[in-house]
Picture 1 (spheres, protein in one colour):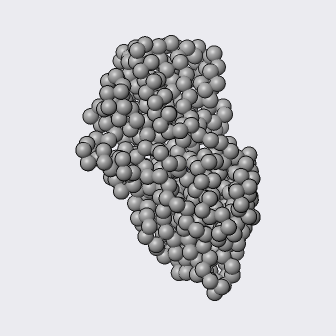
Picture 2 (tube, helix red, strand yellow):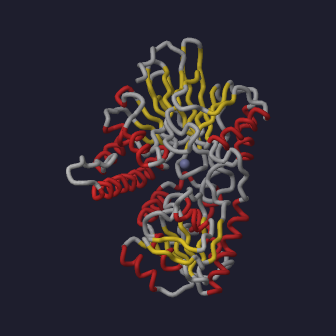
Picture 3 (cartoon, helix red, strand yellow):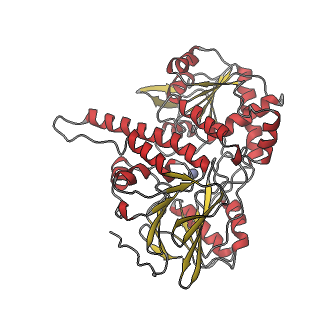
Length: 472
Ligand SMILES: [Zn+2]
């Protein structure tokens, strides 16, 4: 267990999550005699490891005085209800849009925790102790009450002597980089935490703001070893796939995460149709969570880029609600299976492992007129990965199906900066930053980015290790 930090000791950051991996973002800042968490994300790995890591904090939650949250993705905010359940009582600072999306995402997470526990309990032998969900709805509600919304660009006091400011990270609605200024007897120390950094050119969101100057830079490194395809080219390719599938009379099935990716795809399809560049094919977004997430987007136009704002001045319907059917009820979802093509169906989960998408895949995978369009990362041993690998037969809901539908993979819709974007964002800081620590990346991309940053002139660059502390 970590000890309370003495008031006049040098400020330090200890990396407790997303160290050489991409989930469970959680870094502890000890400064001015107080302890602050940057993010408190859910660790997502094997079931046994996830259960242990998410239930057992490497410190006492009541030692933490405040949390500063970079954005609403579950690997950044998803373990906050556990922190509260185990004794944390302080404030959680985030942007207004993050507060709105956190409600959608944490509510869904509690539902998944409950279903997961129910499934495991059904498989338990009689007399074995029951598995409790990691957290439930009431703790999500208590967490949401703790969220204090602060707009971009407005400095706020986290604890006495520690001031923070959010700037737009351009990664998800409300996503922020966190600049922290710490007043110490030896002067001000500055820390910048990128959270997840977006990329220029993504629709709807603004491009990432300049990275604030700092002494210690903590950066994500998800795609530190990769260069993405340009966003505009991907939109063109998306249009091509729709045209081709519609001409065959097939259905275009798009598994997509309900928050972020779905809105990007819908936005592109709607704008292409509005411009007369696509045939008017019926589009269905089959996900109750996507409906709620899209409402959060509508409620936070302050996060939109100039192009989206201009569109809004002429037409408030930027997500094409007049054209696109948002499907909430289960019977409406089932009815889509009987409907003839052409049609576009966007549904969750993004990796095809659960939810309504599984049924749409089952009904279309054998149809050579249909297309399965993969727009996000597919982890190994998921149904999504087996489709990407174009296995001749895939198992869905306990039955084997021949894979006869066309499979298209578009990698250009990523909402994470690639290596070129990261180097460009950090270039103005060369010679000004004392040390750089990389988090939120698998070991290989993180090490590749570390080498590239060192080559670009940064000194003291390293990939953070779990439990390691560095001075700010
Ligand atoms: Zn994220």
